Length: 424
Ligand code: GDP
Ligand code: IMO
Ligand code: MG
Image (cartoon, rainbow, N blue to C red; front, side, top):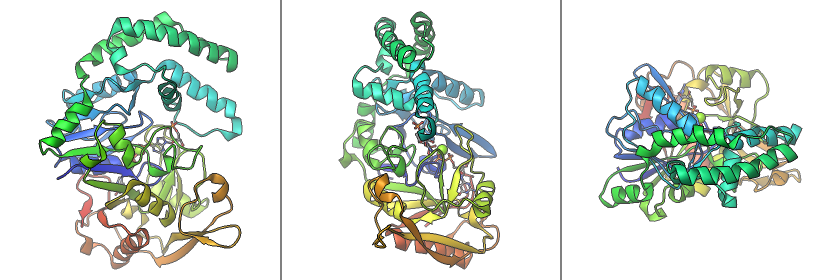
């Protein structure tokens, strides 16, 4: 298996965790490159459910090194909680490695995420309140604290005291919030640093050496294409690059190290948080899909908005990621709906038709999805293990998606379990 990047090709929660877990059985190394604990990746194996936020979804394989690259923002408290949670269930995290360049989510980032969302009022983004945006802001501003700093107490104390003083001014004077006690924060986070020191490794070197020596490296994307800070539905996006390019810059290897890019999509569309969603279903069909698909956020528990499959956004994802194939999850959820709709293009307010996702919200506004209606399929598909076992209308639905997005469907998910996957 050559180096593969797995990315979300909608608005996140497409089932990337499950696909990574499946592919990790054939991988030598798994690496996360962007995002933070805003991600919630579910892996189901042998009746056990694991919800991973920062640790790569390859962790269930005992001997597979799992790397957290320089592009990830790490909340040390959450990471240690996740390590402890996994180890208490008998999953060793000894094979975890964290790049010293990765930025640390500090408590003021979390506070500022909440305060800035509150200040936005009705125009809030609907973030996960994990401090993701404020942490990436500091990285771009060049005042961030990195994993290297965290595990070097003297460096950390000095940097944290200086940044805390600045952040307190912002929190108190601009947002009318409560100041942080720098000494207490330093004490608490120094303890986290002590525990995390043993995991620190140059991930760029580790991943590059692995690739050079013919090992199979699997890059695990978080979030999804439409949440990309540049190419998503800005400003209703996250603060990183969940697209394939983010896998290289966020790991520290070049694009020539990547052989395949797999986009993960659902057989319908979901979105959690605010922002445009052209094919959203606000009535009973949307509720039915939400309930059957158990569409509630892995990280925040929020109900996910649901809608029909949108080939316009999927084509956008194919283009901006250079997808070589897609995995379609949750086909089983659509069973027994009498008919299914697929959005093939958008009609613009001036009556013209576009096949391409508009670059700005202003241009997206007023666009109406154009649907084609196909026959639904009946019966439980969750036990199907080959494409030909699927009801004919389910096969036709997948083939129609494949045709509309002009990208091969290499996997079809029929349930949350590791084995509930059809490889084509
Ligand atoms: P991720 O963030 O992309 O890893 O996705 P999440 O884990 O947040 O959400 C996907 C949800 O769908 C999880 O609860 C998975 O267990 C579940 N899931 C994944 N694939 C399938 C599938 O093919 N069928 C069903 N019914 N559930 C699936
Ligand atoms: P996984 O990896 C779905 C959404 C939030 C919000 C926006 C910005 O599980 O697919 P942030 O906290 O990142 O500043 O929030 O992005 N969001 C996700 N939605 N899946 C995710 O991750 C997400 N991570 C962030 O809901 O709309
Ligand atoms: Mg998720």
